Structure formats: C-alpha cells, structure tokens
Amino acid sequence: MKILCLFFTCLLFEISASAQIKKDSTVTVGKQAITLSEVIIDNKLNVPVFIERVKNDTSFYKAFRNLRVLGFSAINDIRMNNSDGEVKASLHSKTKQLRSSNCRTMETLEEQVTGDFYDDNHNYNYYTAQMYASLFFTKDSVCGEDNIVLGKEFSTAGKSGMEKHKEQLKMLFFNPGKKINGLPFMSNKTAIFDDDMADKYDMEIDMDMYNGANCYIFKQTVKPDYKSNVVVDEMTTWFDQHTYDVVARNYNISYDAGVYDFKVQMEVVMTKFNTYLVPSIIRYTGNWKAIFKSRERGVFTATLFDFNKGE
Image (tube, rainbow, N blue to C red; front, side):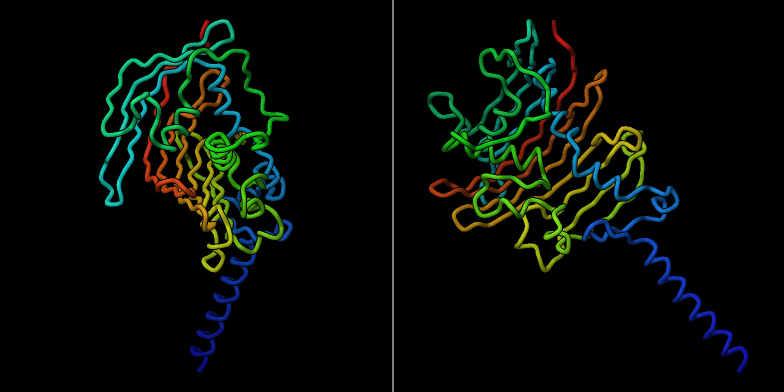
C-alpha cells in the first residue's frame, strides 16, 4: 500500500512539474501567447523588448535597398511551369551590376532562354519575370539612388496595371507581417502582430546557430482554423543575437480573393559585405492568378555575389 501511495505521489509530482514547465515556457505580450524554448528561458531573454525589435525591424528591407548602392554579380534562374510542373519557358543568365559616379548599370554576361519567355519585342511574357526584373535587373542607367529606409513607404498611389501589381508584391515581400495599405480585400490580414490577429497564430522563440552566427529564431504559424483569414501562413526568421539583423527568413503567404489568388513560398539568406547587409540567395516558388490574366506558376533562384562599392 505504501508503495502504491508513493507511486501516485511521484506521478502527481511529475504532472505538476510538467504543468509548471509548460506554464513557465509560455509568456504573453499584449494579447500574444509566445512559447519559449528551454534555452531561451535559460538565457533570460527580455521577450517584450525582443518582440518590439521584431515588429520594428528594418534590416530585411534595408538589405534589399543596399543593392541599389553596390555593385555585384548574379546568377539568375527563372522557370515558368505548366499545370503538370513541366518547364514551358525559362531564363538562365549571369549578370553584373556596375556602380560608377552614383549611377548603376547592368551587363548581361551570359543568357540562355527557352520557350516563350520573351515576346517578339523582347519584352517579358510573364508577371513573374517582370517582377524579378524590377527587383534584380537594371535597365539603362539609374542614378541618384540611396539605401535609406527611414520614411520610405511602399505606395500604390498613382500606379495602375502591372506597376500597381509589382508594388503590391514588393509590399508583401519586403514587409511580411506588417499592415499593408492598398491591397484589396486583405490589408488588415497581413498585420500578424496586431492584437486582433494575436489569437490566429502560434508563436515560438528558440535559439540556434545559422551560418556560423548565434541566432534567435522566431516562428509564427497560423492556426488551422484561421488559415483562410490570414495572408501570412508561416514565417520563420533568424535574427543575429547581437545586432538583431535578419540573417535569414522563410515565409509562406497565400490568399484567395476570388478575383485573384496567390500562394507563394520565399527563402532569403543574407550575408555581409563590409558593413552592408545584403541578400545572397533568394528562392521563390509562386502560383498566381489575376483577373483577365492566365495563371502563372513560377520558380526562381537569385544568387548574388562579388559585392563591391564600385568607383
């Protein structure tokens, strides 16, 4: 009988201890419940301060703006697939961006094209290609740019057609998780840190190495019951433990508004050139359908290297 009582006492103690551990590993910031790993608890991370840093991060966008003031080489691989996943058009090229006298130009060193990637006038036949070109290709000479992010906001004002769509895409790519004005039907559904979105996500903070750097890992995953009510389905970001710069980010976004729908996966890996944080690898897989346009299934990888400050 004593052995039996001892067994149940131990069992109750284990259950209580387990419950205490679970309780201690979850903190609430505003209306957001955030699960902490054991290593985060041991490191006594100031979670509210960390979340504020995450919400106000500009390093991700800054890294892309740094491409405007640097020279670099790039290997570009763009593939447009049919509904069976077979390649129907593609571009593989090597380009070099040159910086001189506060201007940037681009040289195409190599290029192989298949299918109807270009039309008869050498214009892009696909949204995906146009979007890629607007991000990574330079047409003619572009001068007087800077890499300042303070006060810079994306806007669709005065834009229409393709230019408006490209601006909306940039909003989603460079500011995932923030409220984005100008996106029909879903402006409020991108702001995953707002209190009214808090109960729709599971959030976790962990810590590990990434490319030789100690990083905080912040993961946000939509709860199954709310998948149709959000735009950002999942986002994992690696933040440098010391600088809080984004070291890498993976995210999945999707939405079906009837007149258009999309499902996109993005992976971005950063590197450092001198004091500049810059993207070194960008991987994209996207499925888009806009009204009056054919569905596009695109895959691209941009590999950036040989960064320099130019002349």
